[in-house]
Amino acid sequence: MDRWQGIASTTSGKSLKLCIIKEEMNNQKSYKLAVLPGDGIGPEVMASALGVLDAVGDHYNLNFELQTELVGGASLDQCGDPITDEVLDICKGSDAVLLGAVGGSKWDNFSQEKKPEKGLLRLRESLGLFSNLRPATIYAPLADASSLKRDVIIGSDVMVVRELTGGIYFGEPRGHDDQGGFNTLRYKKYEVERIAKVAFELARKRNGHVTSVDKANVLDSSQFWRNVVHEVHQDYKDVPLSDMYVDNAAMQLVRDPKQFDVIVTQNMFGDILSDITAMITGSLGMLPSASVGENHAMYEPVHGTAPEIAGQNKANPIAMIGSVAMMLEITMNLPRAARQLNAAIESVLETGYRTMDIETSDSIIVSTSEMRDHIIQAFEKRVGQVVSETSYELVKEKG
Ligand code: IPM
Ligand code: MN
Image (cartoon, rainbow, N blue to C red; front, side, top):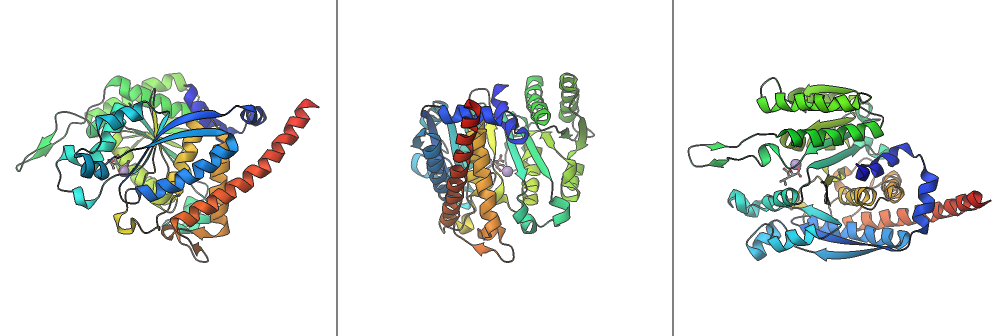
């Protein structure tokens, strides 16, 4: 469970000094990244994320070998497939995958197998990315950008842990003709066990609690889910666990999100609940995500392709940049860099800069690339400050 270590240190702040010293002294590290911009606003937000990554690499002495490839509609148009085996292999051979977004109305009438979304699903499945972490962090300056009241959202901090490679998304048999359609919702024990462990580990490190969301009053698969989660809980008795039906959870998330800490749930419920959670933060354009398995990890914003603003330099790059922060923390084990990047985002929002999706009164509307540049500047300023703090600590340590 070592790979979850990084996440914890963001909140705990313990052993920060040790961490700083280690990070400063490291020689240059090199990472292979598969970059899949995808469709719609995907390429724009990806360009911003790569700009930010460049700045982070400079300051942390990291080298990124980027390989840009097609996925989704872009891949359908050029290769006739939403993702090719070759691209899947490249992703498997990388330290991490960065993904923008996939989909668009142009491909709506394609068969299920040939929809852009299938590219993303195949990636998740073939890389074994069973746990999807979707943290909804409230940036105080954005409290008024949410459609929910300030008092309701301030202080909330929800982490949705979505099962990502099972359930109704992947269940067989499935199919439809002109008379009917069907899917299969099935969970195996090991699938529920491993995602439950991730949720409990995370909650433990956050000093929080777990809400397991299901529909056990109706679905057999959910009764099974609930039983297994409780079995796994025997090893995590220090972490409070409660169960909630998904309809109630949707309602409670908008009524009082502060009651939640870690939510763990099946693939489809997680898809729906994480969009609701995103609105707490003000915009779907704010929510980053990490999809992690035993051997691979992929980082992508939760938002879609937003075709209505694609190509106009108007999209909010913060969810994509936040996904880079998650990569720094989880794949590269650089929690401090991740914190600095998130702090840079917050300080830019404090200054009043907003992309149009998070406009509030008195805000200054900026484009995607302007937002990127402000975040890079804020990051560089912050790194400069911390570097001097670090030297101070090094001196103190020696003396
Ligand atoms: C998400 C998206 C995807 C999903 C689509 C694009 C396949 O909505 O990541 O939440 O349903 O998982
Ligand atoms: Mn979704």
